Image (cartoon, rainbow, N blue to C red; front, side, top):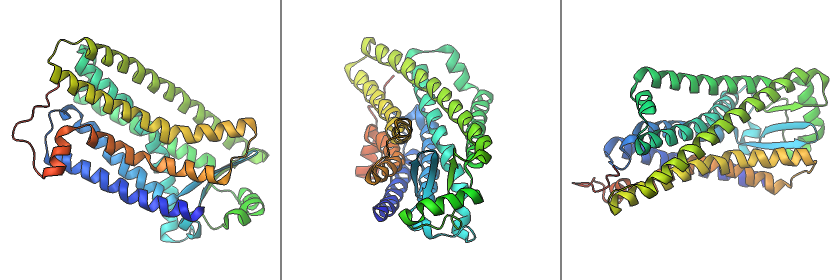
Amino acid sequence: MILILAVSSLFCFILAWFLNLLLLSCLFQHNSIQNSGYRLISLSIVIFDLLFSAAYAITVPLFHADGNLVLLIPVGYTSTISISSFLGSLVRPSYIIWHACMITTSFLVAITFAYRYTVICNSKRLQKLYNSRVARAILFTFCATFALTQGFLLDWATSPLDNLSDTMNRLLSDVYGVDFSQVYYQGNDMNDPTMKSRGLVGMGLSGLFQVSFVVIIFVVFYTGSKIYSVIRHSIVSRRAQEKQQQVFRMLVCQALSPFFFLYLPPFIDATSITIGYKLPFFVCIVKAILVYLFPIANPLAILLFTDDYRYFIRNGKQRIKSDNSIN
């Protein structure tokens, strides 16, 4: 089972980088009218997908919840990498990048919907915000700072401790075949009184994440409903309306992607912890693979729903005159 996860992670890493670099090539070599307003956002998505997939390929973590012991354990080939080695030294920053990318991608989804809302619904206030370089810089700085801060704090709240390593070696070393005193993992033992402060920080971060998640969902649903309503009742040509609906479907796919691949697995874990049910091992493997499908689904949605990019990939050249205007 663990070998399946290790092999799957490498395969997904190669596929994710191929698709994201393919999208990057389309963004730089072909100007699509259909996707013209999303170039900067799409570029941001590509960058974070590359970082996310690289970090995940290095860590290859498996979530383990057993009573009050909550852990992210490196498995597969990473379980043999010592902390003192060069590759082992990359595992900890990879965890930080991975955590930061998870929240950043959610912000990108909300920003994408808000931008499309600005274009379709002709929001003057948001238009001024998007047109202001200062506002864009502030928004970017806030998102990056928030994501990195959460990544570092979560890393601190779940970093290895000697007594935690001893507990894990006693309970789990035979199960996973890992010497936890030699590898970097993340976790917390709620039964250990010395970890209460770490647990409180973790709970605070979880609460902050939930609040930000609710805000993002509100933005997506509000702007999405407005966009859909305007598209349905807009007085434009049938061709233009079809293109608008196609872009809207792309947005929906981009919104569903983090929900299914990033948030569903932790939700399953949290539910199992709450009801005291220990998930079968194969379910843990499936959840880990689901997370890795996220950086694959993102570029795939953009490539599949953008006609100009599909034409460019098939023919190696851009159209002389595009008929994909959605305005």
